[in-house]
Image (tube, rainbow, N blue to C red; front, top):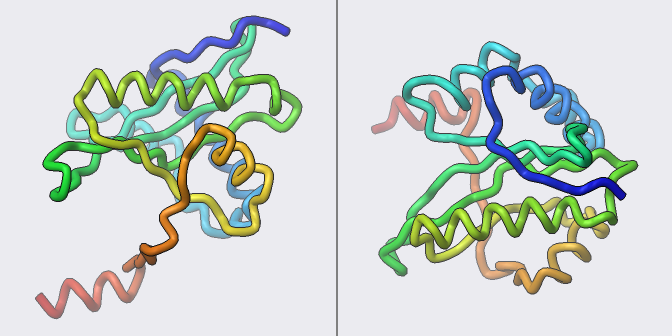
Amino acid sequence: MSKITIRKAVIEDANLILCFVHKLAKEEKAKHEVETSRKQLIKTLFGKNSTSHAVICEAGGIPIGHAIYFFNYSTWQGKNGLYIEDLYILEEYRNLGAGKQIIKHLSCLALEKDCGRVEWSVLEWNEPAIKFYNSLGAKPQKEWVRYRLSGSSLKDAAGHF
């Protein structure tokens, strides 16, 4: 197997990231929910005011996956955290350590930035991912329920404040 490396994404990776986003959405049975574009990724990941970041995973210089992340905050810890929005590895490169390398890279980054934790979400039916995350020592946070405002509910909520 070729050496797996992780590098910071650059603006020239926008099309690649978009491709990975579409592949992940298809696997998660949510392709119809993807609204982003190359232009939007450039703005939100590489723009002047971007608060989200991406890394590219390569095997022998060939891009095989990515992760998108951002920093959040824990009032209880009084520290930032690192939230992984997407972690995707091409199917033919899974079970070779690439996902572990991304998690290792982002965990090191979190520690460098004095973050108190690294978090992410996984679909409850995604057993291979759950098994992988459990193998890392990650613990599910079953006591928390995630909520979301989007579309008309977001607009309605904004009108109520």
